[in-house]
Amino acid sequence: MSEADLYKFFSSYDGEADLSDFTPEELETLLRERDEERAPKKSFKESYFEYYDDVKSKALKKQDW
Image 1 (cartoon, rainbow, N blue to C red):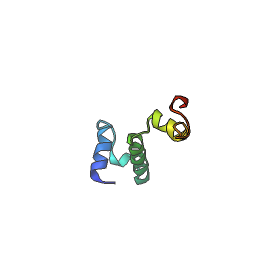
Image 2 (cartoon, one colour; image 1 turned 180 degrees about the horizontal axis):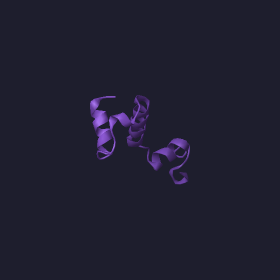
Image 3 (tube, rainbow, N blue to C red; image 1 turned 90 degrees about the vertical axis):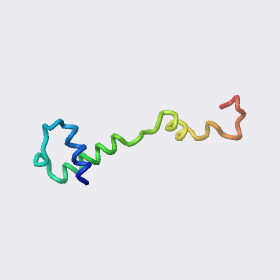
């Protein structure tokens, strides 16, 4: 947890929060959750074709896809 991470985190509170409001464990948890939310998510198309990987099977004719 760097100072830059803390600065970005507290800037989202518009000065209504302070470092003393959180324990170190809470800060780590909140920063980890924030990073997970900002991580790029898979598109629906990628998820679909990952699950149904046989859709474009070479054994099928193109019209049967």
